[in-house]
Each structure stands twice: as C-alpha cells, then as structure tokens.
Amino acid sequence: MGSSRLQAFSDGVFAIIITIIVLGIRVPQGTSLEDLLALLPVFLSYALSFLYIGIYWNNHHHMLHVTTTVTGGVLWANLHLLFWLSLLPFATGWLGENPFAMLPTAVYGTVLLLAGCAYFILEQVIIRAQGPDSVLKRAVGRDLKGKVSVLLNAAAIVAAFRWVWLADLIFVVVALLWLVPDRRVEHVVRATPSPGQQSSATG
Image (cartoon, rainbow, N blue to C red; front, side):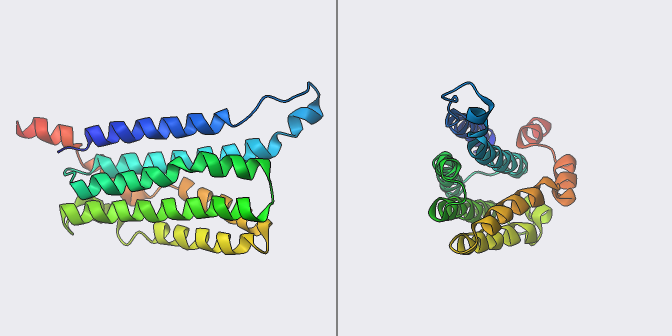
C-alpha cells in the first residue's frame, strides 16, 4: 500500500483542525477598539496553534513523501498523531479564553507534548517498516531536534504550575525552533522520488 491515500486523508484532517480553531475566534460584541483588543489573547493562541499545525503538516508531508510502504502499524501510528492534534482546537480555545491561567496552559502543553511523542512514534514505526537503511532514517538521523522539543514541552507543563509566562515562552521557542528547516531532510526529499514516481519508473 502506498502513502498517497494516507497523505490525502491526513491533509484533510489537518485542514479541518485549522478550520475548527479559527471558528473559535468569535466576533466582538461591540464596535470599539477595546472590544477588538479584548480578543487579542484568543487571536494569539490561534496564531500559535496555526503555526504548530503548519509545522506538523510540513514535516508530515516530507515524512510521507519518502515513505514507500504503509503497514497497519503505520496507519494506527498516524491516527494516534491525528488524535492528539485534533485536541488542539479545544486546548487553544481554553487557553485563549483564559490567558496566563495555570491549568489551561498546562493542558495546552500536554496536548503539544503528546502530539510530539506521537509524531516520534510514527517516525519510528515507518523506519522500522522500511529498515534501518531507509531514506527517512538517513534524513532524520538521531532526530535531536524532535527529542529536544518533547523535553521542552514537558518542561513547559511543569513551569505552567509556577511560572505561566515561562511556559508560554517555551511554546513559542519550540515553534521557532521548527521554523528553521532541517537541511538534511530537505536534501534527502529533493533527491528522492515520490512513491508514485518510483512506481511509474519501474512500470
């Protein structure tokens, strides 16, 4: 089984998640600038979550681009990732309505942490299905950035119970960390034909 159908399904879920998040931004009750500024925390939480979804979509696309075999384990690992990401609209809405509150911040961090762990699991399941010499393994290497991100999100959850501002800062730092592209992945993806191209070349 190729990865095109899995990628199409996942892309649809990513699009739905973004749609649900933006629908959480309600129209101001009044017409003054103060009424609009009251929505600033909601907008900032939306912007941060939009950035995270974009990062996951980007990396997920690259990962499936070099995935030639989709097993049952890969399907379930992918659903596991989408499950945690689908909770991001809830966490985003709660955080936006309660900025600098301890529990909403901790819950937001927990969703990010579990999504990061799920992505790492999906990555490892794909590598195991394709072998240690697979393109994906060569592309991600030891995946230090992914491991550091998980550790930082775990630290953010702990910080939320004492220094909420620090937890919010960590969320931003992790997002900015992933804005810097991993050149190894980019190079391998460019040099590797997609599963569809490989099939046409051998057909």
